[in-house]
Image (cartoon, rainbow, N blue to C red; front, top):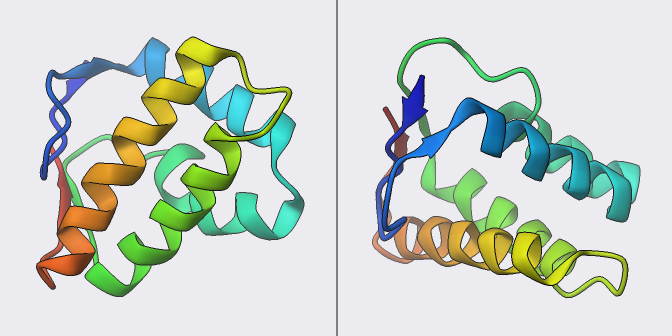
Length: 100
């Protein structure tokens, strides 16, 4: 199943891609940041879901920390930044960040 993600993620992403990104995120982030990301990048719901704008803001910050980590591979860091930008756009617009 592919996921379409609102607020600027340019193309749908496969579950495999998201699972691999989640592994990289979990590897470079402390537990407190992973807990922030876990509702989205952990065991995701099978159907569409929405992330409230306040949560999207925190997720964006954690994704930026992961993207800039020295152990994050460059290509996965770029994907993490793309997701961070989308989450931040949703937060700035005070809109839910939607995953379908």
